Image (cartoon, rainbow, N blue to C red; front, side):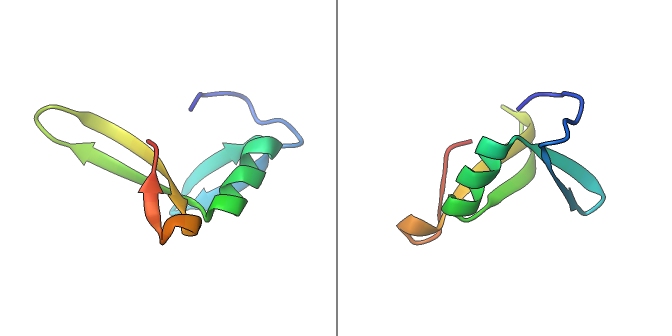
Length: 65
């Protein structure tokens, strides 16, 4: 994950008022896998956003972060 300026070939997704930009190669992987889940964690040992790829090929499990 990185902060960057949008490029014309990027896919733009607006989810709940937050815009996400994905490069074309990443967009295709996310579509094939089944999507991503963005969450915010506020725990004593960790705090911040998590991004997980939802893999529909393994019964909807969440893979990666």
